[in-house]
Every structure is written in C-alpha cells, then in structure tokens.
Image (cartoon, rainbow, N blue to C red; front, side, top):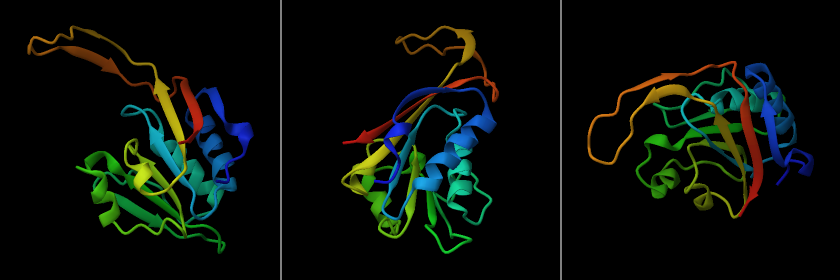
Length: 167
C-alpha cells in the first residue's frame, strides 16, 4: 500500500481546488494493487478527489462520476498505473463488484460508496471519509410521516477528510 503515513489522519479541506490537490498528492503515490474506498454523502467531493488522484497518476481523462456505467478505466498517459474508478452505489451486493472483473493487481482502484465491498477486492485498502456541512431545516421522525427538508450544498464549504488504512 503506497500512500505515505504523512497523509493518514484528519484534515480540513477548504474547497474543491484543495480537494483536487489532496487527490494529486495521493495519486502520485498510488501503485498497481492499491484500493481506495471513498465514503461520504452526496456532494461531499468524492469525484473531485478522484479527479485529483487521476491527475496525480497522469491518466487519460476526464474523470467523471461513473454512476451509470458503474466502473470506468482510465489508462496512464505515461506508461504508469491505470486508474479504475468505480461507483458502488447502485450495486446490490459485493458479489456484483466481482462480476465487473476489475484488474485490481494491475490498477489503482478507487471505489466511491465502497464501504462494505472493498474487502472483496483486497486484503488491505485505504479508506477516505469525507464529511461536509449540510444546511437545512425540517422534521425527521420514525412515524412514517413525510419529512420536509431544505438542504443547500455548498461546493466551496470546507470538508473534513479522514484517511485511514483498513483493516
């Protein structure tokens, strides 16, 4: 696992350009066989981070969310490590990830929404959790009533990013 220990822990990322820069730092150190699981709510910055990872790996882009194609492979522009970008959100079970026939040994694999399925790809992986502030108001309850929310996503709002090794 190639990501340096200096990147482990929690940090605050001030905006999208800083998220991409963190991704570039991570991408420069990834090697074939590395698996990175990205966890966070919708709009947290998972694809933005992956875009930076792709730049660090010097892959052919553009890096976009693979929500509807499930997985997208980006070859290296310089003969380096290719990037496989997976969105596990729509997968019903971890076995479906295996059905994608991902070349884990020959690629750096980024799995958005991958918590609970990464252990089927590798014995060890990096987990990056991204938290963002959500503005809004409303009522949540367990009585089956419809909750009304007003939620604003601010792309420029700071994110809290936690990087750890698993297991």
